[in-house]
Image (cartoon, rainbow, N blue to C red; front, top):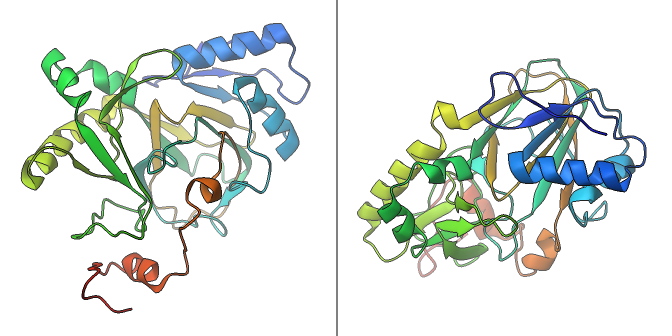
Length: 288
């Protein structure tokens, strides 16, 4: 039976040494699901899992996308490289964001690299009742971000990038808990208000989300497996320049992959490449 303990010094999340390499029985699966529902982030230490074993363990929380349909590994010399990533929620700019994410440290420079997590449920608790009610009825526009290292909102919202709109405060689909669901990287604006007012309110909300007391910084050790709720929590990282080794094996729980949700997106479109260079996109006048 997996036993969980609070992560020392962390504002949320629990950890366990339970061995996930072997099959998980019904009682053990129930304990994992219960801990996940309550804490939203689980750290399993000292694991040595193949891609299939990681997927099998994650399967206790839902249907795992098969290998090849989503990014299977994140490394400093491969996918996503070494640049910083602003706080975000994977596929928030689609109708079906990823439900659960996991990263397993296959090869890391011990203690030299981190992933940061911000708790949208905890942040929502700090909202006044009036603001909570307002945000539950205020649409927030999320856009696929080409520049991912920082908040970089185009002057003109490009029609070539996937986007989705949902309330700024959503209810967790499993527990009903309110989640402040706006992100530094992807939320463009709040509906029903002037741009300056939207920016001012987003600045306030980001202050709640990314306050030091609302952040867990996971310092990676070889064998760590971190599993988190992609709706309740956002994640990001600092610049990894100088980090020699960081290979993280990835698996996720989702009903659909990016290609299914965004069939018309073309990363080779010269306009997408221009946005990546920081050039503003104006549909009527821009040439690329």
